[in-house]
Length: 508
View (cartoon, helix red, strand yellow):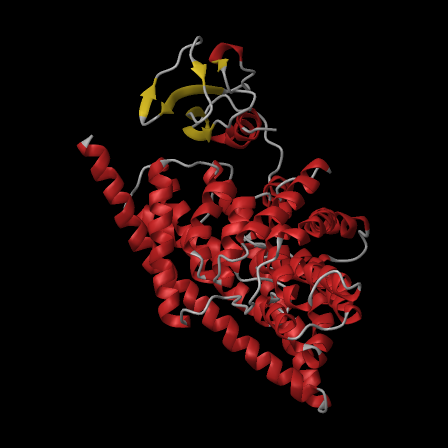
């Protein structure tokens, strides 16, 4: 018992150390993006009346596009958000050089996001945090399992420093990335998230990232209209997910067009928006705060939604470092704004609830696309800085999640990971590795004897952890919901085994 207490204490200490390191790096990442973005917007403003400056801006964007594309070619693990890569690493399906990812993701992310592309800093911040934690784990020569726990903490710290949302960041790692609520993981993740948040708060202040002022709570008689909002968000989320996951497949059909062309297109298209509509570019936080202060007309909101939807898809399709986290929230905010304005025009909804609908719609949209409803609820609550909307926010989130689920939606980050992984063949020799899973209530494993489960070839169940006790299983051992199981397999088979066993452990 004493050794377990010491181990948990060490988890907290590791988390605090990780959080401090990640908080400093991600804060520098944020400062760099904000500073460079400001300069680009100044150039764009001057370019309205100065042709020479416009030409310079175009050349700068093209140079950035070519350079960041080169970085991605040098290390494909810095592509896109970075969340699928971290998830794959914790699953045992991927591994990469932490320093290469840290340096190239930082530089590439700052340049791509600052140029005005409709990308967020949050996904890259998560991967930067994971890379720093991986470097610390390698420096301290941690075991494989401890290394994964530390990387989880780094991921939580990265998101916390990006959003100033330590509780939601911890839950995001547990719910979306690691899929495991073990004591060491959540202790490390929570302490790292709090530590990183301390650093970012010291740098950027205590004001929440999406702080919005509102004075009313949505009354119960409005809730029937929230059902319609949840349905609209659920359908919208499914469309967004489908487009994001398949846009590169559509590009591939045009084989005669080089990939670099698809990278250059959004860099050129973004320039007119920077010149004449600067609040709409980037991740979307500026736009969300702007429309919350002064509601535009429905026509303007519809144009904003169309522009941000198309440009978000085009920007992410480049494969350059940048996330969809904040762009997803901004799309949800626009859907909520449009829906509420329609109700206001029909005299059904008072104007005073306009901001409430923006807030709850962000949570619903993220939940149905990311399939992480608890994270969505807590994240928006922390980002806005108020608990007043909690009931209506949870209600819409649940409706939107169920609509997407019934229509066949899948967690977008997991789908992105599967697209990255090449099909693996079973290997019969090589280094042994261990994979870890948490059994969910209602899954194919729940209540089944080990010998009756359809295990994939090339793996062996090593142990079961139940209520802090370890069980060495035999064929008659019954697996129960909440069990954490350890699977041994050949290192080269890890992706194949993980994909198959995960399906058995999840409630489908």
